[in-house]
Image 1 (cartoon, rainbow, N blue to C red):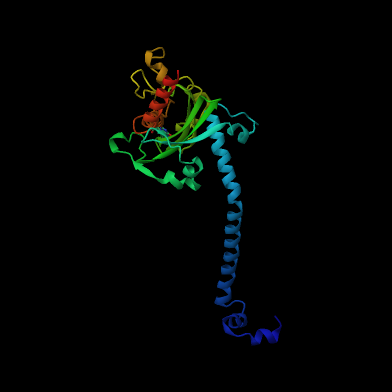
Image 2: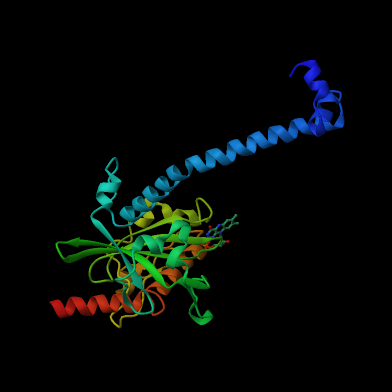
Length: 278
Ligand SMILES: Cc1cc2nc3c(=O)[nH]c(=O)nc-3n(C[C@H](O)[C@H](O)[C@H](O)COP(=O)(O)O)c2cc1C
């Protein structure tokens, strides 16, 4: 702006322009403008990166599911491997699939959608300390032709410091464990955080969730099992030293999710259907 133009400029802009450089108004204006520009840049890049973030979250979810199932190959094509797995909605209260509901709608954006339909967990049953759970849950099913080969179910519950989120894969008998993986928790690295240690996780395959009476019996023992050759061993995984509380959290969350308020009725129905077919 030339000098005469600046002089003649009216309103508060003109007034501001005529202020000396070290005036209070100009001193405040500069940081205000810098903040505004930065805010626009940050908000703009957050918006632009959102699709990429979503794609990464989705890939991460797929990797965790494949890892629980022991199907994650290093360097393998995650999306292609995941394409073999069918995501199906389970209505926990009905103990059956909810065929009219689409998994994508249930998973929703950031967990909204029908997954937001929550059911309170009665305090007496709330051993996983989750207070409420979704009515509909997405399970992942691997079929060989039409025969079920494996199912991967989401589980979560409180450890010592945090909620542990994971997936557990089961054989078609709906009791034998194929694998377990936690993908989010805030337990102490080196103590409770050892639930991510592949050596600890390697104990899970082959363990049984349900005992012969059909009750969830799977457990993490305190330290090493007192009876390494005992009859209960098929339901037991050795605890992690210094992480008894986290181990108890794992036991509790699995027993909740495989109990009557969790996947219990659904898995019972799957077993009955398999017996009818056999
Ligand atoms: C800083 C700190 C962090 C801890 N983090 C955990 C943890 O993540 N999980 C856990 O079970 N115990 C943790 N503990 C230990 C528990 O307080 C408790 O002593 C332990 O669960 C008992 O297990 P132990 O009988 O195997 O020693 C932590 C203790 C301290 C001092």
